[in-house]
Image (cartoon, rainbow, N blue to C red; front, side):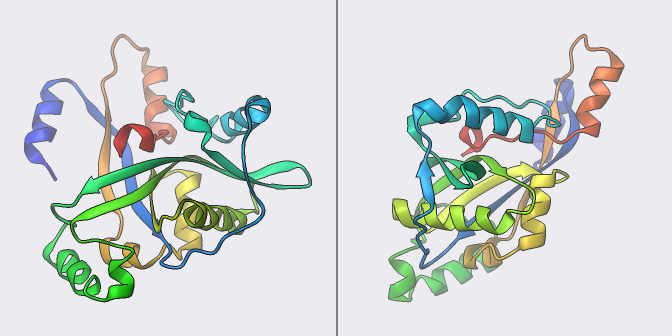
Length: 220
């Protein structure tokens, strides 16, 4: 919806290849899980192999920020990782929640002391979730992990970003239950735009056919 930005990027030769979806996951009273483990250095190679396999059909995947600050958390079953997530702590000063309705709802809710302890209308401290991993059939375990990490870190909100057409987004659109903040602010969409230089047309078409990996590390 930023027409000036779109026009400028078009002049620079960028083209839209997909749609980004950004949304929150929140729990006002997050439940802990004693099944959560932090990946140690000896396990990183094995876990990274699973993550790369999970994102093998995505374009622009890279793993440089995974395991940053030793903050990749997992849940295992029978010794194998079935759900995983990298976290980055983030703090924003809030100018606008995106519209009059959302701004009014947040300010009304934060008058309640119990909620104000968790959500401030002026400042937001939360986690960004990245490199999300989920074995097929373990979607509920992924939710257990995300909620448990909130409890362990003393946070109530996490930010997620992914390609709207990806299987990963399908997990959250099917499971729903993203929390009260998502009910207020919903999902924000943005164009995924790239500039292709000296690339064969067959390779260029892959950016249209395949989902794009969206790192919250770069966008939060």
